Image (cartoon, rainbow, N blue to C red; front, side, top):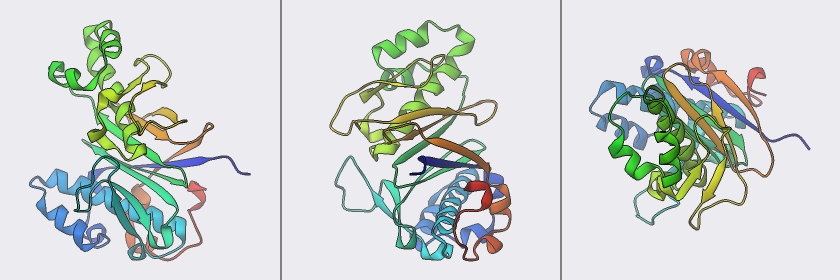
Length: 254
């Protein structure tokens, strides 16, 4: 049996193009149009187009054959929302999309729920965020850091916690204080998870998203997962060529 694997692809919103927008479905294009700021539109377009391209390459089909079912693990609102689950020929693959600042990321795994999160470190008053993000123990550990280290430490906590909640499908609605993780200078680990959505076993890893960013990946798996990181620019720079049906992931992503 082959070892469990998760591939993570990083891109920049500057790679947005009309060709990528053409890959989105009608609902995605409508949501894209509702964003007021061009930067938000670009991040959304790159994230959703990249997710569709990667699922298509994994399934060996055309990107327009891939659809996403939105499922929320927290509520039962009738309108489609929540974590995207690949459908059609890509059913069985698991995907997670994230973006912040100049980073857009997509995680892809076969049969293992994944959650990917990236956060741009912002040097600002964090008191309001800390109050609903960190548990008492986490806040004490953050307060023990030197003032210059606290912004990066806080967003390390945030990325780890949101990655975990995205993996279960709960998202931020699940409550960031429902899960407690290790401190910023410790290896990533889940210390406590309260609530019915808490998984029995999860793998949590920090990722390098570049200077000024903190990122984490959570995979609901019983044993360590091999994580491979890729640059998505070549794929996004030639979407028409990437649309050609293949036999699976590219050599770099196998």
